[in-house]
Image (cartoon, rainbow, N blue to C red; front, side, top):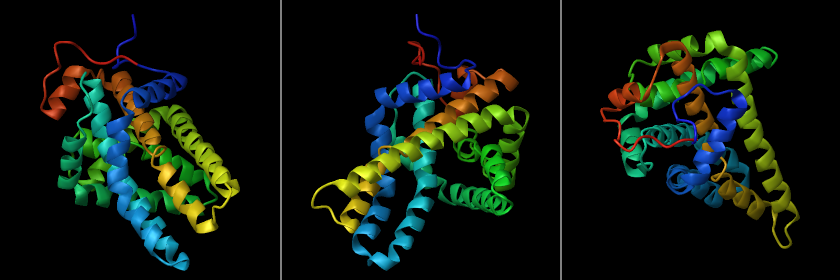
Length: 248
């Protein structure tokens, strides 16, 4: 019998469960990511090469919204149903300004930390890992409250949060680097074409850190607050399905 979805996990178990969840529900999660990030890809295709940083900026902004949509779809899976891509996109649309405001404060804190010899930035990234999850799952509107909630969840388990967060981004970095190398050596592919190819293929990688962060958020709440399916269903305004949640 497979283990229940809502249970404490080690960092390797969180990573493994994230791979399994994505493998089984890849279509809607990646489709939502692609739809949200599509404008940045169009900018990269249409702008002159020297203006490509604008496309990169657009991508980095839109990643906050695609991550928020992924959070909701992971919550759907936790409740034992298929990810609701349309519902997730609608809710993200209704929370654009909260997501953006929280992301700006999160980015400023991490950026300032990176200026202080990098290590403080990595710590800030870990402490603020739950910002988009708190916005979407707990439905909080006050940005400073969202920041404080993420810090309170992470502060007593910083090493575990750091481990899961860094490993998730490392997986994406290594896979993205591999895609870049393959695109560069592909016959007949120029620099601009290789850049567009990597940007497009990267859509398939971007959901992974958000899935890991969401499972880590559940893990911390289970350990600290006895969080369970009934709590999640209550936050989402749903009922726990009678057939039970998926197991990973």
